Length: 130
Image 1 (tube, helix red, strand yellow):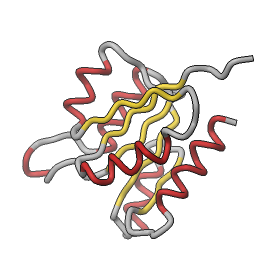
Image 2 (tube, rainbow, N blue to C red):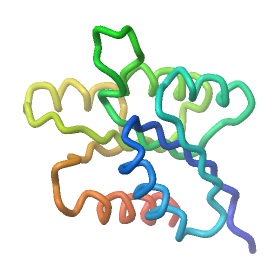
Image 3 (cartoon, helix red, strand yellow):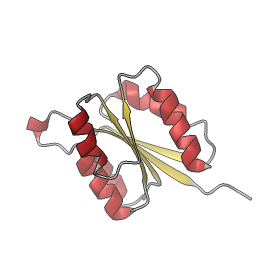
Image 4 (cartoon, rainbow, N blue to C red):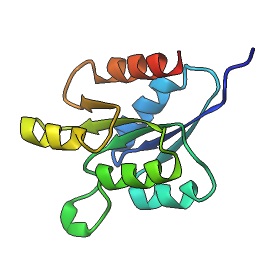
């Protein structure tokens, strides 16, 4: 029995973080990975490709630039695939804000400043795929 093909979108404006996340999840067979540095770039590919997995940065650009944030990105993804497995990456440490973000339907919220964040991403993907 072959594993179901998985498509992962990484939406992260830091090229370093995006590259590390890609390396972490590329060890799982059958995952095709797409990287985007903005929600707007992701929307172009979303017209052609529907992801099963999304790893999304909350702050994709300064809010005063009018760019999409991670919650808005998730909304577009969920409209396309309500079952998309979503991980939010954030540097926000405010408990009230985290509770608010949880209400938007992310499957996991992980903190970028946690030294084990990439291990948690790997664990989350492994659990999702099993």
